[in-house]
Amino acid sequence: MCLAPVPALADPLQVQLKLDATPAFAQDDAFDLDEDIVDEGEYVATLEVSKKNIWHSQGIALAMGVSSAPQKFDDQAPTSARFYEIRVGGDAIRSLHKLTLAETNDLADAAVNDQWRPYAKFRHSVFYDGFFDSRARQGQDLTVGLRFVDVRTIMCDHAARPASIVGACSNTPGVSWDVRAEVMHGWSSDDARELTQYTLRADLIGRTVARAVRFGVRLRADRSHFDHVLVGTEKRKEWRVRAGVGANFTPLVSRLHKDLTLDFELRRQWRDSNDPARDKDDFHFLAATGFTVKF
Image 1 (spheres, helix red, strand yellow):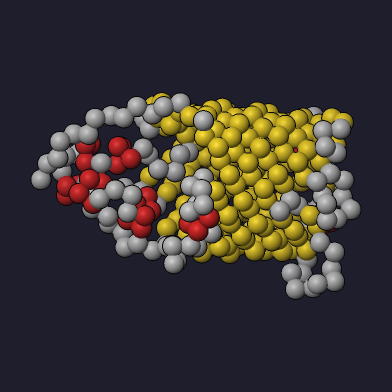
Image 2 (image 1 turned 30 degrees about the horizontal axis):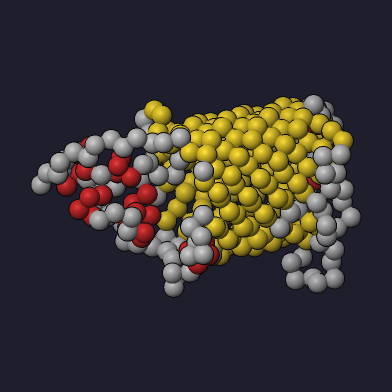
C-alpha cells in the first residue's frame, strides 16, 4: 500500500516567554514534622527564540532569562541570576510530517520509530546575592548529550495522528520512557565550583488516567569530578543519586490553557563523596508549574 508523499512543512521561527515556578523543600526525614526544612524553591522567566528543523530534524534555540531563589521558608540568604543559553538538538519528537509514510511509502515499514536525539547547549550565567543586589560570581556550562525517546508509545497513547497516516503503532498504550546520558563541564570565577559531571537519567511515564493525571518514576545518577577542590591529596569526587515518584496534572490543567503545566514529585536523594563531610541522605518535595506565552 502506498500513500502520496507528504510535502515538507516549513518550521517557522518561534518566540515564547516561559514562566516556571518550582517551590521545593528538603529535609532529612520526610515524616518528621518538627524538623526544619530547607527551602530550595526557584522561580524562572525565560525568553526563547527557536526554530525546530534546521538540519536533519534538529532544532536550535537561543534563550535569555532571570531566576530567583528567595529562601522565604528558611534562614538561608536569597540569591538570583541572569543567564544566556544556546541549545542545539534534543527535541523530544520530530516534526509530525517527519513521522508520516512519506519517507518509505510502505505501510509495513512505516511504524513510528523510537528516536535518538543528540543535543548540545552552552550557558553563561551571572549570579547575585539577594535579588540582584551584588554580583557574586559568574560561570559557563557546556553540555553534550544523547536522548532516547519512546515515541511509539507516545504517539499511540496520545493518538496524535491516525494510524493510516503515522504508520502502525507498534506499542500498546501504556508506560513510555525518556532516557538521557550527558556530560557537562562547568567553568566558574569561583574555582571551587569548576567540575566535570557525568549524568544518566530515565523517566518512566504512565498513560493518562481519567484524562487528568499521569504518574511516573524518575531516576538520575550524577558523577562529579571537581577540578580544584582537594580532599587530602585527591581531588573531590562525588556520586549523587536521586529517585522520585511523581504525579503530572498537565492533562487536567491544560484544559484551562494548552500551555499550562503542573507537576508534583517526592524524591529521595543520596550523596556519597570522598569528603565524608559532604555525604548526605534526604527527601525533597517539589511542585512545579509552568506557563508559556507564544508570540
